[in-house]
Image 1 (cartoon, rainbow, N blue to C red):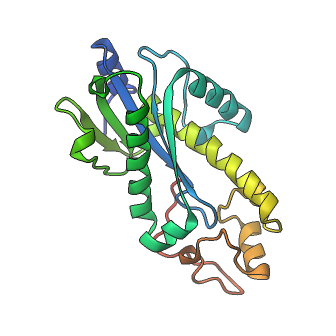
Image 2 (tube, rainbow, N blue to C red):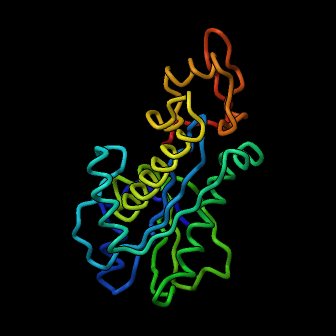
Length: 228
């Protein structure tokens, strides 16, 4: 496994596709939320994909939905969802690694082609290690920051994870009203923090992330970070 900080945009896709191999991109959404699950997606794009794919965070909701429809209709993908309970139990860092591994394995097991055709596994930021049973001699794993802006495979994964999680939070809002989860999706907005102060936490809140709430401020535990 290597950590690469600088390289040309879509470097791994170009290298793999020119030699008739594939790239698997992995990304997560919801890592820094106060409520709701963590969602990870793994995506393998068709070789020589020309469709424009960008980091989900810079797309509008409409643009994400359009891209999501293209990805789910044309690429191979898998999602893994870990609940707030698991996040509280094992911490967000370990939960993210577990979900990433799960998403990758699910995708590998469902592929219509030999998984040895996957040349690169590219991951946004997290130092993912895959069990040897799901590795092969030519598969290289790389992780690097800001992966969504560099690899279109990671960008695709970020879109699938984002749309999947947003849809889940809208459904959860119907079941657990009063916190406006459909709007802020569980992130620590001022409105969300004020509602927690007024109402307390709900069944869907991450208890380990809510330590430090008082009348004046919300201090998140060290487990939380700014990643979307």
